[in-house]
Length: 488
Image (cartoon, rainbow, N blue to C red; front, side, top):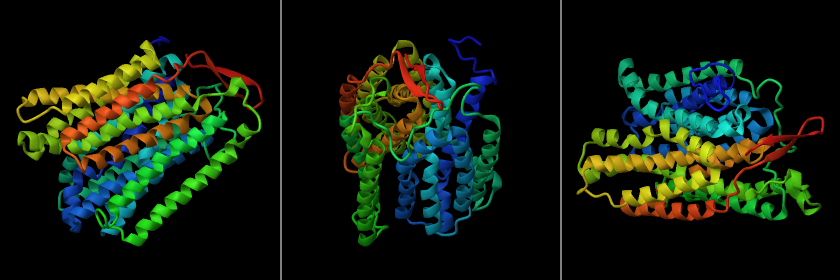
């Protein structure tokens, strides 16, 4: 196989690891969203109210924000092989609990816990980063993310049919349990067949665990500032469940959650200090420094790309239905083009990043995203439906190619912290979804698209401060010697 090209039909070496890992991600997303296409049947079987159904949708994403941070730390410390295998193994049993639930409380608890499987994405970013060199890592990460992310679409396409094949009013239980069985079996297959690094390579780990390392005093405070939006998003989710909104939590529980989030932020701050207090005592040698602004810019870029994707996928079927007076089935089929673009767009975004430069590619794709959402904001019932669908898919290309470009850079920031960098960026994607869906609950679809376009313009400005990865970065071997890793 040529060093400059990937033979995706191979099942040897690094390409085998790529295929095994994107399929692990595929299964994690299938399990994460296996309830969505079956909600009507679940609601009918258990007699759920409309408010309870909305609560399940919120609970499904609530835990993913902190989970991506935690998983990022674990994968850097323990390695992706054991962490991915364990995540799939544990998730399968939570999936079984959801399938067997006989009350809303059981549904809610198991759905909340299944939000943790949404963090699986972070694990593969570190795994692929270990196996592929800088000149190929963008395309490889794009294939991993794009093909794996299709798991949610596969669930939407396949599970209603599988439920019908099982038959009966509770066919949905067997359909959901089937995804758990596949995931359980694959957890053993993945553990058996993959390794953290190619033979002879070193798996670099952070010196301490509990928070991300920074290398300057300014970056210490920048890191604390960038943690705040994640807690704010969790508070916003709690507000949605409070008496002021869905009313599924009482005032006392709501206030306890808010207080708990404040205490968690203070605890995390203490961990950041524990890990990084040395930067206030002596300067970190230039060889071992990195700029935290790289992480922050990638966080914001993923907020506007993946965050907007999750939000738009959630509202687009209803938007098409109401704008063009379609049936729900017709609207769902037309809107599905937005998610289907993942198969090609993410790999293309990664390939652009490899071929044309990281910063230049991200600039182009975020700019296209801004224009795309500006166009979507002008769609009315006077538009031909074909043109509206084409505009949607064109916008989707820039959104998902932008995601690929973001994670083409993540493994090049600092090798031993790739899991944590990926975890924080991934968490910001969920923060974006919460933010944009909250905006959507207060404004028209047209204004909703304009808000995302505005956020993209701000992100575009931020991307101009990104430093192009070049040269080499240093990591310390277990014996104390320094190894230089190509990132250019």
